[in-house]
Image (tube, rainbow, N blue to C red; front, side):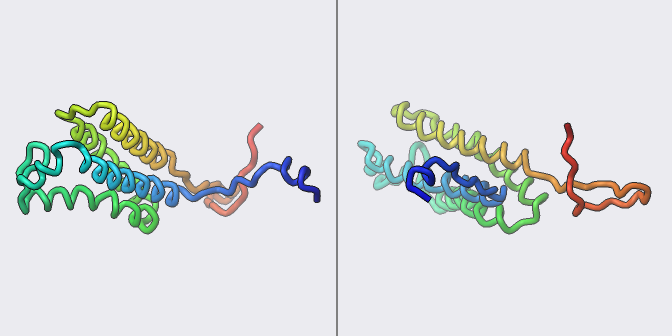
Length: 163
């Protein structure tokens, strides 16, 4: 096969399981959180606030740190849970956690003066969360077919194409 003939052939588009799509979206969200939190350390005055015992308006305490840890552990756990839970449980977990993180992400913009930076970062977070919700909503279902005349249902029969 010549180089030009190979270059003109379409690429194969393998099916990606929904669990992998969801885990990848949660991993992307976690990377985004890490990078935003790292970059915000460079915002003038932010480190001084941390050294003074405050993050935004909150006192840095064991309670605050525990709450922050728990909230940030959920997306991390969703990477694992998306691929290991049974389909129904994984779907529900993705709905619940992504649904909780939408207002959480929006809350992070409250009182911020760097609207472009936080608007862009939170906008991308919201796109990822919407993707997670849509992917979980569209989770494929097993085809269940009735075997003619028996009343039995058999999900391993091939589906007939509808015209």
